[in-house]
Image (cartoon, rainbow, N blue to C red):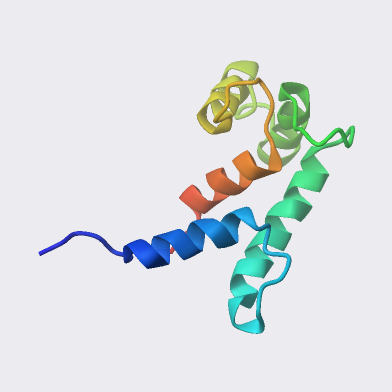
Length: 107
């Protein structure tokens, strides 16, 4: 018995849809659109200088505001950045944020 959850065709469709930025999704995919819209709003709030990337200081401010100073030490925030910064450029892109949220979101 195969342990594969999605068919190869389903995986291919999912990857294509994810990369398409969900701009032309049909109504039956509204939950996917809501997820994408939610991530975009979160990213906009985090990207304080509106340069299209969340820097370490921007992430530090958001985490400190949300979790308080005890859980937002520089070391903790640096570790968070390393965990989600897939291309290791020291910043967080919207796609990287989306991937991180997708990994943490309940299914």
